[in-house]
Image (tube, rainbow, N blue to C red; front, side):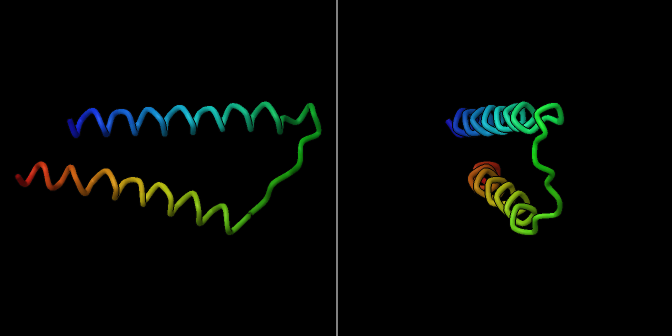
Length: 68
């Protein structure tokens, strides 16, 4: 049961991350004169903290299952 939960969570994360990446590559390509993005501290913090929270959310039940 835990394996299925984690797999579905990973699939959702994978599809949303790659979908967002492909959309951003298409929407902000150079040929369209897209905006230039430079160091944005808020985004840098968010894409460090959010994956860490997701990893902790996955690791907690897995560690409990392994110990049991």
